[in-house]
Image 1 (spheres, helix red, strand yellow):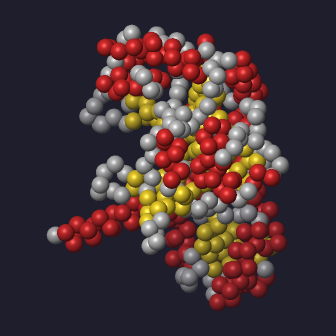
Image 2 (image 1 turned 90 degrees about the horizontal axis):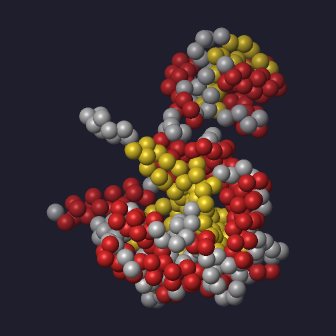
Image 3 (image 1 turned 180 degrees about the vertical axis):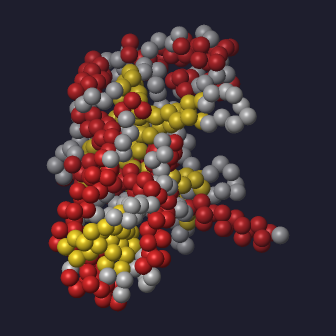
Length: 447
């Protein structure tokens, strides 16, 4: 029995680490939109190692710069402990230090995408895996760093046909080492006078982490937090100026935002400023229920100023801002809008190449290269010989146009362009094929 269970466990584990090609297409669509925009804004791609040092997490947790970490720890034959990559931002900062990038002209702009791992709370699953895409700006003291990163994410969303009305950027100034302690003290005092009305978890956090109450959804805690003093009343002049500067940048970039004075993170990895890009999706109700579908808020990206955390990792005072896109949430959101990558008609190439005869099959590779250089996405089934079977495959993929290369066309350097639905076709010289297809595809798209 144990062997059978173990076999199923291993199979499930492998499956959990894989992604179906249709699912991977969603991630690829996000990547195709994101990287050209990030590159335009000066962010250089960095490859980060799968392994990180294990001791760094305990140090950050001890100083409350990250929540109690739960990394996946591995041991080498020599007994040395290493951790699987836990956070893309942490790995970027570690690499910045180890690769001696301090000498680069500032600001240093880095982007990286990678899978991250954390130990799972349940014993039957050893770890949880997700994908993060992060932007990090090092050495920029002004809020231009945050503004540019938010611009990149917003323009990525626009490129994916996401309307700005579907997104919400929540921003808050959370204070610095000068002004945050006085706010923490005021919140603690406010909560101590009302501690009997708090839930069990919030009672525990009154002394050491009073701002945790702003994340609690218990009705009685919401009433207490609603009357709490806002941090905006406690900001020093430097933090006020920083917040004002960021909001002015966002106004100019036409990035809509909500300034929420009670939006905080559970740990201290962010200082001075924090933000999230949120979206909502409908939670479909069961058919037998008459209740309207509820809206579920998902976080597509989060970030802020991370100088305190970075300074500990790098070993000297360093101004750093970062933002992390959660690709699992992007996938969930795009699927909810039917921008999924699962819809063959939406995502598959609209052109299908077919061939008939030995010469045509040999010439097909050259024709494919002409199409690639012309940036025409195309599918094919060149291993098949029968033209009928190839056209059937074309119909199943949802292609609109079939290119037919026969013996005559191979000799004449022409190709037959056929509309699959109507059967209308004409012969086009291969030298004029790209222009012809661009006009035809554009016309059909407009219709």
